[in-house]
Image (cartoon, rainbow, N blue to C red; front, side, top):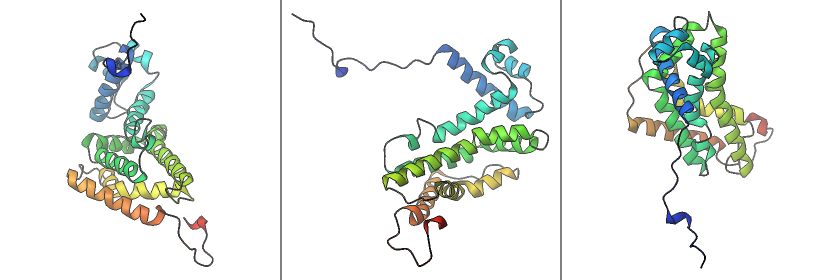
Length: 230
C-alpha cells in the first residue's frame, strides 16, 4: 500500500526565514538612518554607524561600500514599501484599490517625522553634495514615479484607464496626494498633524479627481483636440 500523499492543506505552511545576513543588513540600515537624522549626512561617519550598531567598521563595509550606498538603501527601502514588488501596484486588484493603497501609504509616510527629517537632511546637504541629492531622487521619488508610470501605462493597455501620457498622469496624481505636505516639510516645519480619517478622505478625493480625467476614454473629442493634450 502506497503511503498517503500529503496535500497542501494537510500540514502547516512553511515559515519564510530571513537569512541572518539580511537581518543584520536591515539592522545596519535602521541604525544608519538614525545617525543621519541626528548628525546630518556630512557629519556622520561609517565608524559612528558601526559603533552605534554594536559592530565593526569592517563588517559595515562588507554590506555597504560607502556612506552613499547606505543612504541609497535607506531611501530605496522606504520607496519599495510604497511602490515595490510587494505593493498594491504589483498585485492583482482594481485600479481604484491600487491607487488608494498607494496614495494612502505615500501620504502616511510623508506625514511621519522621520520622512520629513530625511527630506531636510537632503535639502541641507544638496548645495555641498549634489550627488547625494541625485541618489535620493533616483532611489526615492524617481523610483516611485517610474513605478507608478509603469502601472498607469499597463492599466491603460488593459483598458482600465486612459493615460496617453502616463508620466504626466503619474506626476499629477503624486502632486494631488502629497504636494502640500511635501512643501510643508521642505521649509523645515514639523509634519502637519493629519488623522487617519483625513488621510483617507484626501486620497479618495485625489483619486476621484484623477479618474474624472483619466478613468475612461472620452466618448468624443472636441474638434482639434488630440490625445497629446493628456
